[in-house]
Length: 530
Image (tube, rainbow, N blue to C red; front, side, top):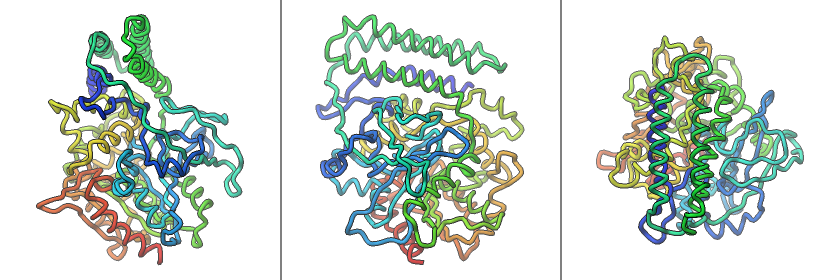
């Protein structure tokens, strides 16, 4: 609770930074993830004119698949190969990390040239090489929706969009939405004025009161709902203050004010649904991933029924766990090959920075280890971004966690402001077992995933970054050494003289297109032919 309280206080105190624009005339304001609208190249926008997909999605198509026995509808971003690309036998299935969405695999740089899109978009690069590429957004991530059964879906901060209810020939519970593009909205540049000062004073006061109220809380049942109500009340009070002062606000601040109000309303919406974040790693493994893989098979119809799969961070952990489960049960995984990027089932011997973030007390009661149902990581990182990207760089360590290279400022901004989501406490608690003896285990703590990796028969390429503080090379190798030697390859990217690779450099760093992507492509091509 102390960690959450501090994070909320930092978020509130830095919230006013969202109203500031950069000093150069071509810049855009720093706005929360849910409000950002990435730009696309003119050629791409011309090719996708159907007005039925949220502009945040830069894929060619957006598909939805329903999870049986639940209200969840998972989003699948599809990147179709161009006509002149080499033919491939298998589709490519991508899995993102914990509390992240599809954007980490598609850091398209907007206004920059189309060649730069291929350099920074892992998904777009792979589709250009002939692979029908799909990114899964598991429940709670990105554009996946929960508790919605109607034909119209509205995501906070994004456009309302219609969902085609026409049954697919192979999958009656799936929906497909063609892509569209839209230019970035601009906000009039202006210096700070009394509205910024007023908002600053109000939000700081809000933060102090919130901190005090949380300090007075207890671990008794109902604490979460009481805290959420207090936050909602305070948010509404701030909205009222802004609305009351609207008449005295200069015209150039009207759009800025709307963005601020919308952001607070988004936070209120998240607080209303945050208690529904009641799932763990095994839900992803046993429900989300299998139904999404089956959908991709039905859409692409590979002759052998197999997919090529790549997982980054937790995405790679999911693939390892799948191989372990299928090996234990003697089942076919349905995978032609697997590539993991910065992933491990056992971090206990490494110096991973996650040790400072996850609840690692092995004997702790899960209900007490985290006294909140979920952590709004996306909101907190969005609030912290100005302190990491602008002088005096108070949170400069945030950038080193993501990248050890000179990532383009626009791409880093997109990564931090758009890529992260709310993460359930149950998920964090299960993932924390990867830092304990025996490594990651199932929710019953009776099945240890790394114990059965030696039974696998799927070729695996495990990749690490030399400067990855989240999943260091030694953590990656801890899992690699458990796989059959004739089935695994291991590669660490980074040289003593540089370039170096941190956690996100493997999929979006400026040197990845020259070093990492071709290496992965060679492995994929070999096993696609096999």
